[in-house]
Length: 284
Image (cartoon, rainbow, N blue to C red; front, side, top):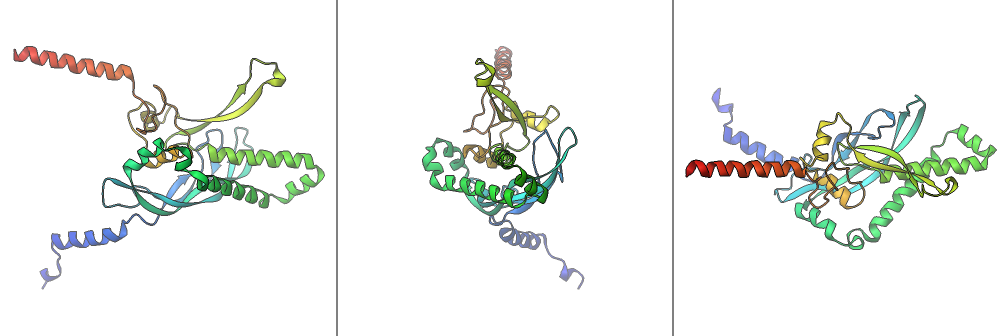
């Protein structure tokens, strides 16, 4: 009687298999803890938020030739406290992606994505989607203005327009300044037409995706030891993320990785050839 209730390993494995077939389907995004920003010039509270994501760790496709990735998403505004280097406190509205539906795609199609013409790859749908995102940001930024700011605008229309323009520029910069996982956003001022007299030179704020010195994982991507994830690769191919800065050349979007050191590869090949020569001498 005692042993009749004990299930065999075969029954346990079969039950587990049936449960996982349903539970691990690439369909529903799963909640993940996501940093609100990787901008190193500010400190944010809270540092992270919970958003839904699609990926290889959220759903299975039944074949190694396919990968689970995002099909539909929405842009949500996340309100956080931010502190600059002077400890000035502000409230910022950060636009972030929240995945709403997942699907399986062929891994090879992500690599072929870059060889397609831009018009065929994205077309009017992609442009309309970007326009809708910007409209959402502008509407929400105007709706969430504090009373003191509105009163200040009534006193000075000029300052109001400048402030609104600055806010819109910052939000557009957030949308265009996304980096692959493990890389950080570094902002810099680039002077254009610097050879001309000062009134004719223009400073523009640019951003790059680079590694912190103590980020060992990021350094492995930067030196070409590892390839970035398929999700980040797709983000770069669709021009929604910036390619990372590489140590030994330009980022290869088709391979999804930085080039490795030519010195390391040549020394490796020379050592292997010398080892082969020593083996031939020993055999002779």
